[in-house]
Image 1 (tube, rainbow, N blue to C red):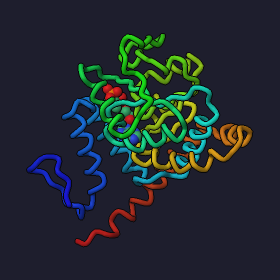
Image 2: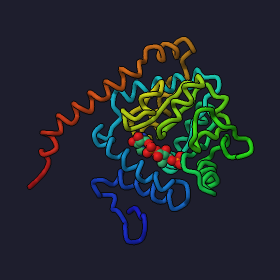
Image 3: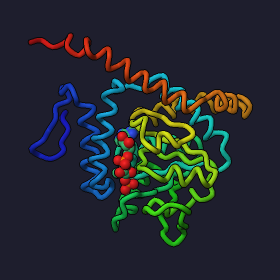
Length: 265
Ligand code: PTJ
């Protein structure tokens, strides 16, 4: 079987970068269907670059952050997961599974407004089985204080106490923090403003994060609030980001030797 982005561009499964190319094509298809913004292609490329220097795997620091994130979502009174175009294109089914498992609504929230995008994303989520989708009725939206971008228009997020924001640009984390919300970010760039401002920063690819969260949620659902709070209180986001940067440095150091080992010249 092969992957068809378009008819001139089929990628065999044996291609050494098949997995990465498969997700690239999901983003390209998403852009053609209005789900993904044009800038979403560039954002994806930036993510791929950071993923490379993390070794394209879920690191132990990402696992700590994922555990803390799931604990925070389980303890929360009004949690919500914000969904943008890239996330909807990459992991719609997994996102819906997580949302149902934790009983958390998904809220469509876009940086790049374009007529028809909300509907296109809603259709993708519905097709994946979502039943609780917020952010689809413009009339019900209110505007977040201190934010100029289109992301200021929110629905359930306005009332939420914990907001998970995968693949976010710049300034919304800051605005959410000023409104006393706990923010969980998923961002492959450990030094982005979102990553640094969030309470819990998962530095990993969303395509691995959501399946891992599903697995951890199944385990943590059995714990009581005191045990969940212990997980949360033992998590230090600043230290975890610093440790992630150390892992990147170690990985690059190793690659100075390893990268050349398998080359048959
Ligand atoms: O659909 P919209 O209109 O809401 O727009 C979505 C994008 C992603 C285009 C918009 O939010 C944007 O421009 O984001 P930025 O400023 O490019 O930031 C996205 C961040 O996500 C960057 O730090 C990337 O490194 C990171 N990123 C990209 N792909 C992934 C990722 N992080 C985790 N998993 C990925 N697959």
